[in-house]
Length: 161
Image (cartoon, rainbow, N blue to C red; front, side, top):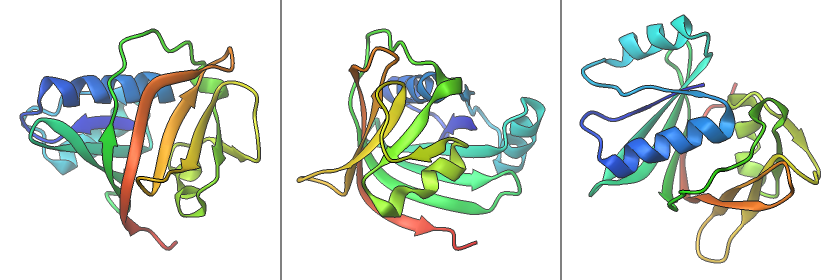
């Protein structure tokens, strides 16, 4: 997946995109003046098959929109994000998804990761939350949960293919 920002992103949003790319084995690019078509072409150039665009409100990541390589909107999430400064120790090629929130199972297709019932290490945990719709945590190859977390507040759009 190619991860990019809205135009003129804050440092927090750029850092979030880099962390997300690192955690998922994706490619992150600064958008600059690229339009949607140019981003889709860039995704194909770097052999990525989906595109995620991270938007912000008041300098903080607030929304992720996932698109297919044909430009079709697959999913939009309203999010919050935590800061992460430590080394993540994740092997992205071996990542799996453990989801306790059925509405977000589509992320396994978008991220091209196997959806499993449980895993001991190196997985993305999508869990229910008291204060929001879901939390997305990353568990490293040692079985430890990283501080990098995405809080899903709302699902705006889901593709129905």
